[in-house]
Every structure is written in C-alpha cells, then in structure tokens.
Length: 478
Image 1 (tube, rainbow, N blue to C red):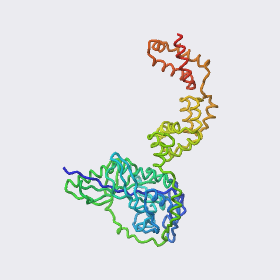
Image 2 (cartoon, rainbow, N blue to C red):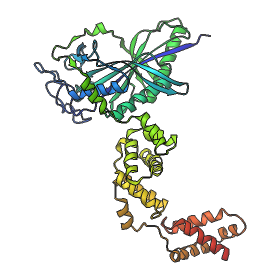
Image 3 (cartoon, rainbow, N blue to C red):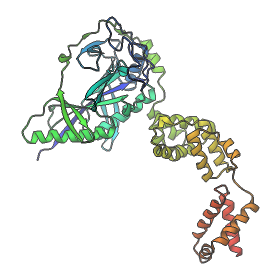
Image 4 (tube, rainbow, N blue to C red):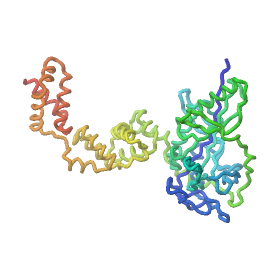
C-alpha cells in the first residue's frame, strides 16, 4: 500500500500595530462605524497619492531581524492588479520583486523533535476592505475601514509536513511578533491570518505534487482540521486516478469541508509593475542597528532567565512566557513583592481560571501589578487567610481594588485571638458529636471536617493553624 507525504507552506498575513494606515493618516483601530476610518487615499479616489508610514517599515524590519532574515537595502513597492469590490483602487500596493526581508527561518519543536522552517520572504502591503453579505436582503455591502491597514506577509518555504508542525510554526511566529509589539496577532479579529498551501506526494519522491491554497482559516484548530481534510481529499483523488487541480479553496469549519473558489492565479495574472507613486525604500546599517537595538528580550531568553535567575520550574516558565501579557504582569508584580514563585502561582491558577470563566484573553487583564503584589504580601505574612485571599483577588480581577484598603474596610484580616476562636471551636464540637466520636475512635481525618466547619463559622478569617491546635487540645480534654 502506498504511503504519502504532506508538503505544506504558509502565507501568513499580519496586521501591524501602527496607529495609522500604511499610506494615509486614517485610524487602524478595530471596529468603528462602517467606512468611518477612511479618506480619499484608502478609498482609491482619483488624484490621491500614497505616503509611506515609516513605522510600517520598522515593524517589518523588526520581524525580519527576529526571524533571521536578510534585510533588503533597497526595497520597493509594486502594483498587484485585480478587480474585486473590496479593493477600491482595483489594484493593491504590495512587494513582488524586492521584498523588505528574505531568506530567514525559525526553529520549531514538536513531538518529533526540533527543525527549522525556512522563510522565503516577508513583504509589506496594504489590506483590502471587508465585504459584508446580507442574506436577508440578498445584497453585499463593503466596509473600507480595513482598506489600507498595513500588513506584512510572511511566506514560508514548503518545509512543514504535518498539522502539528504548522501549529508550532504559527505559535512561534505569533510569540515573536507579539513580543516585538508589532501586532496583537488576534486570529479572531483577523490581525493574523494564514493561507495554507498543501500538496501530497508519494513518500520517498522529491517532486512536489499539485498544491491547493486554503483560505478562511481563523483559528489554530480550524487550520489543523483543514490540513487533515485537504490531505485526505488529495490522497483520495490520487488513489482514484484523478488529478488534483491547482486552485484556491475556502474552508467551512462548521461543515469541516472545503470547496473551490477559483483557479489558483500566478504572478503574471496580476500584471505586476513597479508602483509609480512611491520611491524605493533605502535602508542603511544605522537604521538596521537602531531597529535591532529596540528589540526586547524574546520568549526563549525569558524562558531560560526565569529558570536560571528566578528559580521557576520549567513548566511555570513556559506558561508565563507563552503569552507576553502574562510575562509583563509577572515581571512587574515580582519587582514589587520579590516573590516570583508566589506571583507565578497566582497568575497560573487564579488568574487563568478567572480568564477562562469569563471568556477573556490575557490582553484583557485590567488589574494592576501593585494590587496583586499587595495581596501576595498580605497572604504571605498571614494577615489574611488563603480563603480570604482568593475572595479579595476576585475583586481585584474585576474592579482592580486596593487589596490592603479592601481588607481593612471589610474586616477580613485573619483572626488570631485564641479566646474568640476557642468559643467558636467549642460550638463546632458541640454541634458535631459524630465527628468528635469518629476522631476519638482513631479516624484522624475527622479533624479536617471540624477545621472546615470552624473556618465556615469564621467566614474564612480564622487562623487555620490556631484552629487546628485548639481542636486537638479540646478533643484531648474531652
């Protein structure tokens, strides 16, 4: 029986985090009323001229340097001609002949081990508008707010062989770009989009099969499902003696099925020619050095430092560095309280739990490191119990309250008064004779129930150590 190898390359589009568009001063903010972030340039009005946003070039260079690319010293733009309603000029300004970055690569790690995925090029271009299909009215309308938003397109080599490798590559790219601050890379908002070029060939052969390109992939899970489905579809065609057609296919994640959109275009179909309204971008050593000097500590370096200098376990370090917002919160809080492992625990357990419960992402964390650090100090000193600490943290998470002030105003400080606690313990013993009898009969676990009942009576504010000592003392005396 024949075995087949999957060959995959990706075209990853990333919306850059500039405040204004690539060739005009319109806002790039996500959302807004339709067509409210527009002007004559980004709507393609006659006589309007583009002006290149310098920050776009610097973000593109930063991503290129972080992915081991060579920076093109003389980079230029080209016109890509095609006609579609969301493309107001009837052409897109992109880069074909002299893209800003070339010949890079990133290392990925999967269950099969480590490998390098090559990056053929990174080029700058403008985004198109967005078509909105109204099925009720049977019309399509266009919103040009996204038109002219700056993009980089990261074109990989066909080096990936499985969905697992594709996801590892995308996660690595996303972390690099997020750490650079070049984009938030939110797939659900379209600021990171991946088109999958896939073909299959008989294992052991070197010649590539006919590839297809799949679009409309807006989550890592959808990408993995689409790869598996397209691989199976192509193998089935080959096994039946049919030809795989080179085409663009649209993935329907609900039906887990792709369908043909159009035959795959080649470069000549777009009639590229040099963009006449923009001069070439000249990049010298000084500019490259300036961009390189601004590069922050990246994920791999943080991962090693957290273990080496802060003594965190590898598992903690991987979770914290796996999202830049977690890493920033961790570092700021640790700088205030000096307790890295305790900060890590609060982020990894309670923070992540509340994010999941509220359907939030890490970038939506609104509380300050100051209030988290205060809470950790209160809990660590025994000023509040762990139960109270969790209660207070939920208030911090939702309202960013001052933890010290909240504990004081609501009388949540730990009760250490042995006299006051003794009265409550005696009441609990009187109300739970069966547990008392169980304990006296050698069932030591019964004391845990009695501690829990006492803590409930004290609304979690009792010092659990004193409660335990009192219970053991009174039980011995009975």
